[in-house]
Length: 289
View 1 (cartoon, rainbow, N blue to C red):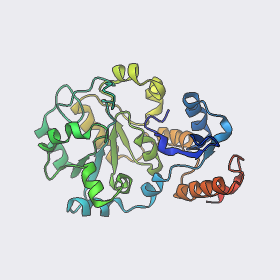
View 2: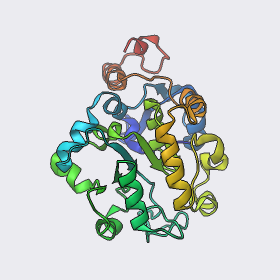
View 3: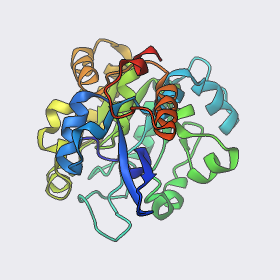
């Protein structure tokens, strides 16, 4: 289900032979464990629900202050929208989906001046965060659209300033994405999200997974053209209850913990593993964090 989860979320411990073996898989929820294991196929006892440490940043960081410092701008009183799409070009050259990169969203038609006017009229600052896997291919192309209302969050800048993107993310009043798993983390904030599935049919054919029931899992309006995007962004910002019921449903399925203590739980899990204590037991003491 959670496209984008990488092996970094596995706690690997050397086996007696010296090979690295996945001994513990940190999961978001029991429901997520069942779905993930359909892909991974580990003994179910190796999963422990901890939540993701990166989400502690999402829930505690001063994203606005960090974003202002990073770009040297004043965001007081402004609406912040972040667009964080997933990647289409895999490292091995495999192409997923059929998105055009003529404009940010892959729309067949896009009027930049109308978009800038929309941002101005609604006092929105729009931040683009490309996926690291393909940012190097397109960031220079999109830089030409930069303005007071359009900013690009580059990986090189984050690296230089030694700041994680999740320390910026909660600055946004609204998230736009297509199929990125960042959406599931965003649910913890109970803020609106708008989807741009411009190549859903083609992407389903290559990716599959949770996309097989895309309408159910995506708790927000879907837009495949500029007019509908601007309309739904405006409505979502003006009506906090828009799609809230759907967001809460997916939140409860995906996140067993909705606090900022995932790092503590993972560290406790590592401590138990290193000291030979029973990490494999579904012990309740992790719930104290």
